Amino acid sequence: MKKLRFLVSLMTRDNDYQLEQAAAAQQAATSLGVELQIVFAENDAITQGTQVLRIIQSAEALRPDAILCEPVGGPCLPQVARAAVAAGIPWAILNRDADYLGELRRSSKLAIFSLSPDQKEIGKIQGQQLAALVKNGGGVLHIQGPSENAAAKDRATGMQMTLPPNVQVTSLRGQWTEESAHRCVESWLRLNTSQKTSIGAIGAQNDAMAMGARKAFSSIGNIAERDKWMRLPYTGCDGVPKTGQTWVRSGSLAATVVIPPSAGRALTMMVQAVQVGTRPPERSFVTPESFPPLDQLAAKA
Image (tube, rainbow, N blue to C red; front, side):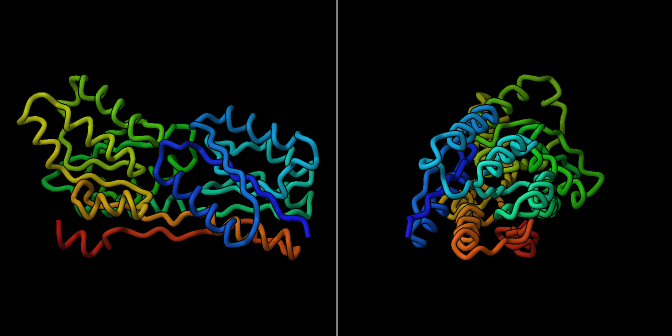
């Protein structure tokens, strides 16, 4: 029997959750006895589309038996997905909700599906964490992902649903990396408004950006000002055991939202679909949870 080959397209190497995705996919591939190629798009949707399309358009013998993609941009590469299906290659989306999946499933019997966390639920959990941590009417400095990214939008919406309405939110934009959050916080600190805004907690849409914010505040020259910012609670999302959860245990972060990696489970679903001919549901979900649990966080706060 031919050994199956799969392609996993991920966003960036500069993010611990993306590296966890890659590790989970590789572990599943090894366990299942399939070959795996992992490519990173360096946070650029055009690069990602070009990478995957080039592989789809390669000689038939070189094409993968299925593609799993965590898209960089909001549209989730619809033209690339259509090209894959037209070439007879099954297609799965990780951590996103693509509107075109239903259309592709109606036109093809291939395995076409998504596996993702509920992004609004992630935001809701972070909103509950921040509500427990913000004291004395302070606001929240919220570092979000790219404006065009659907996950960033849904997490922000979910956070606003559980954060008390009297808590003012100041939003900054990062690119899911520590360095991008470091830069955007440094730029914000140069504005006069940063000195006039009452902040009681810093929340970031992933752990890497939360740590980038900490790094920016730790570089403030004025010791009293620096200490004021460093005493505030910081929260993130992803909750990778070696990074986010470790940072919570060490006190660098007050809390994180654990998002189980989807790549390994999705690869397992895809291998079964290709080998047995089953068809996974159009949408499946992994369940996020607060770390530490919300009741423990509230008691500690």
